[in-house]
Image 1 (cartoon, one colour):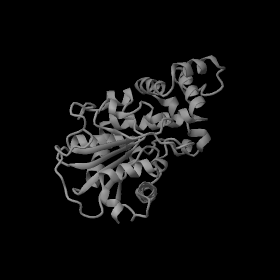
Image 2 (cartoon, rainbow, N blue to C red):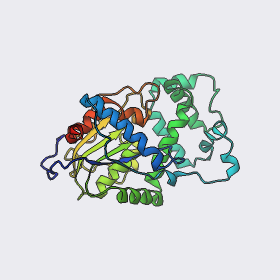
Image 3 (spheres, one colour):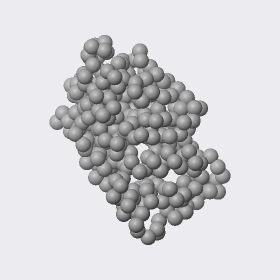
Image 4 (cartoon, rainbow, N blue to C red):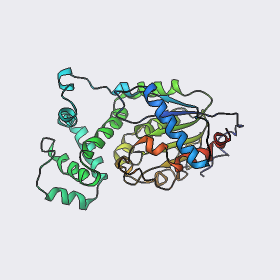
Length: 306
C-alpha cells in the first residue's frame, strides 16, 4: 500500500518538480524569504547525499503562516527578553489548555522519568501550574535544559491551529493559495505535518506523488483527538489522493515521540530513524539527511537527473 498507483493517476515526468514546504512552529518572527532558502539548501544537501552527485536546487515553494501566531499583548512584557518571557505564557493557560498540554507532555516521557522528577526537590518551573511542574522537569532531564517549555510551546501552536476556527481557516487558506495545481509533493515539518494532512483531506481532487512528514506530532493523542478527521485514509492505508507518504523522525525528538505513523495509516513508509544529535527537532537537520533525500527521490526520481 506504500505505492498508490491504483488510486492516483500516473503523471509523466516533466522536468523540475514543484514542491511546497509547510513550516513548523516558532517562526512567527520570520518570513518566507528568510525561511525558504534555508529549506531549499538543506533539502539540496539531502538529495545530493542520497544520489551521490550534485543536483540543481529543487523547486521549492514555502507556504508561510507564522505571522498568524504573533503574540498579542503589551510591548513592555514582550521586551523582557528570552529570560523574562520564554515561559511566561505558561502562567496564562486556561484549564483546557493546561489539561491538554500536561497530557501531551506526559506522552513525551516515561512513567519512571516522571517518578524521578517528582521525587527530586522542586528547583525549576515552580511558578507554573502544579500539574505541569513534574512533567516539565522530566522533559528537561531527558531532553536538556528548557526543553520542556520549548516543546510545550510547539504543541501549543499545534493546539491553537486545531482549536481556533479563525486561525485554522486562515492557515488553510494561505496553504491552499500557495499550492499550485502542478504541485507534486508536500513537505511538512512539525505543525506543518498537521497542516499538510489537512490540505490533503480538504483537497481530495489534488493528487500528490509525495507527502513527506518530518518530526510529526500526528501520532500524539492530544493532536489526534483535536483533528477534524484523524481517520481519513486509515482504512485504505493512505489518503486516496496520496501516492506515497514517507515519514522521518529522530527517536529523541519530543514532538515525534508517539512513534511511527504506520500505526495509524498502514501505508505510511516510516523510514529508518535519523540522528539529529543536539537539535533533534531541527528542520534543517531533517532535510539535510540522506534518508530524507532518498525518500524524495524515490517518489520524484527526476530530481536526480539534473
